[in-house]
Image (cartoon, rainbow, N blue to C red; front, side, top):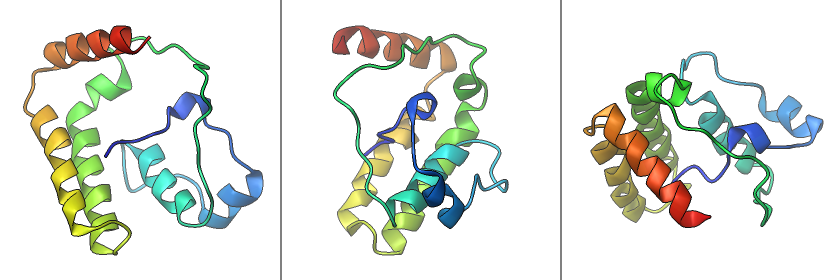
Length: 121
């Protein structure tokens, strides 16, 4: 449905990263998301039930500046996983969220993310 990991707080064993490789330099955005797909094919992943970081949202963030490229890559990575059989065909439904997000102006995305973050605390 979405990327379950906050990149700045991810920890993993060195052997895992050595086995799957590092970031795919073919992509200029969302390299972490693509890496999680490869890691989770050979290892388990989970989230701690604690907030370890606090994320700020502002117009100069990489995730805002490269938003369109990140969304394009997100859709691409998910489609690849579905085509490979890692997820059911019904998972195409979850591509709607990033697609619709790509149509919103940046300032509105920041407002929505800030509102969602405050609601989840």
